[in-house]
Length: 170
Image 1 (cartoon, helix red, strand yellow):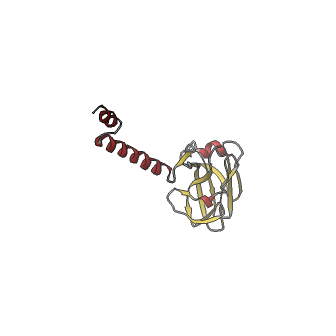
Image 2 (cartoon, rainbow, N blue to C red):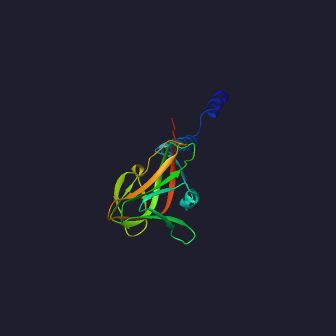
Image 3 (cartoon, helix red, strand yellow):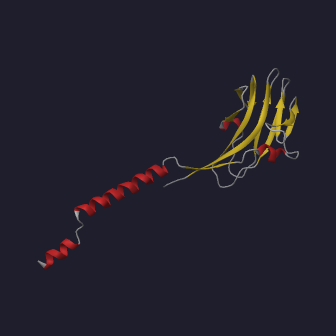
């Protein structure tokens, strides 16, 4: 009888075994969900255009000119209706796998954003496209460019950098 009690003391109860199995299943499920495409994301602050273009870092050509942004104390740019372009050099945070630029724009017609022709809306909206800027690796310079051809016009209100780091669970 003493041997049987010792043996039973080492065997978990059905309730204990069920709890342990449920806990293990929960841990496995959370690990799978947490690692399936998980990203660490960093967005630059709003009004980054003010910070970057406060000096003479940003360049314009053709009809492009520096103006006020959405508020009287912010920086903005306009280009058109004659051909013009705006270049904004941006630094990227280190430790991220991918950096993407978004530009807040409105206008009439089309604009070349990072070399891609996109239709503009008269309402300001963020354009997020990896191809809309020269995507770079971490720490490398990034240049956002906005240009228009004859008969089109664009207003640039702000710019931001979104940096992603994929979390590997291998």
